[in-house]
Length: 135
Image (tube, rainbow, N blue to C red):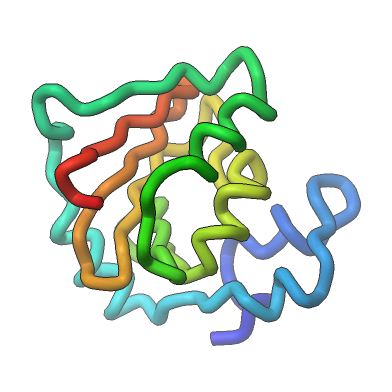
């Protein structure tokens, strides 16, 4: 699937939202519906007890720095919004543009490492949950 055919592409291709540079768009790899559903089936209902939480509502720059400092060894991560909507992207892209992938009030999203390990959750009430044991 081409990024322009992805249901959420307007978030990154429309000037009314965030028009990301072409080299960034080229790094976004939409998953087909079957793969997105398979990934979605692995998402736990509840995050592990003791997960690290970050309130991202106050300071976008602080959140960017927090994400960038995580010891994520995967070059690519996959983000899943719904059972049929997911894409792979470079971890560095997610860190830099996280607020274009995680909308407050509307999005709940889960992130996976290259090995398929679920490690990060965005909650629509603007909180990240991190399972440190996964990274």
